[in-house]
Image 1 (cartoon, one colour):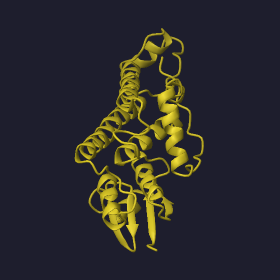
Image 2 (cartoon, one colour):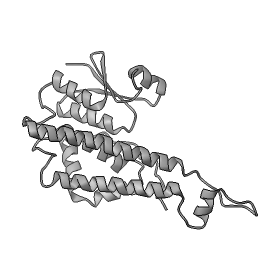
Image 3 (cartoon, rainbow, N blue to C red):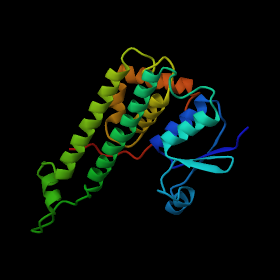
Image 4 (cartoon, one colour):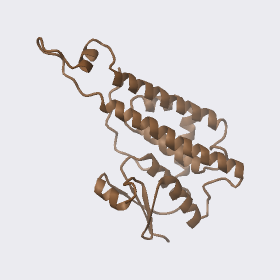
Length: 234
């Protein structure tokens, strides 16, 4: 039995993707969480990004190459379909999910960071420009940007509903690389701090059933501490 350690931050969709692959293959692993930039750089000297998967002392990074390595080392329960056309579609969807949701997630973080708390103006002192917009009930550019990003993410989720259709999994009857990518992203969106996303997903029965199907198949997923609630955009 290989000694496998998954190094990750507490909430990381790409780590959930790798963890799901390990569970599908029935591989026992230890999960080690860190937020320390120096430790991340030690684990992954190339980019300092997690996840990093350690297998008998050898380290691998970048979630998709990690899953390909798992298929190479542990071929039982392959993570792509046998049919070449279906396998290509699964790889394409996995790439789309990883890049699309990560892009909008980072845009959302930038929009949130730009919305600094502002106290109401006192006396004749003018509030900062963004504060004036809030006091008068208008939206700041950062708030508008956040609403636009949230709308884009909701559209991507609706795209997934259409992609899945009536199938139990994407492009096949068995879960694949695509499902691990999508499920990891959806779980962070559903259980993370993004305002309104949990309730939005829960109004999409196709996604609710799909996520429950994946959770059952993976033997359940570890509970997370509740994410700090982000205030809804104005």
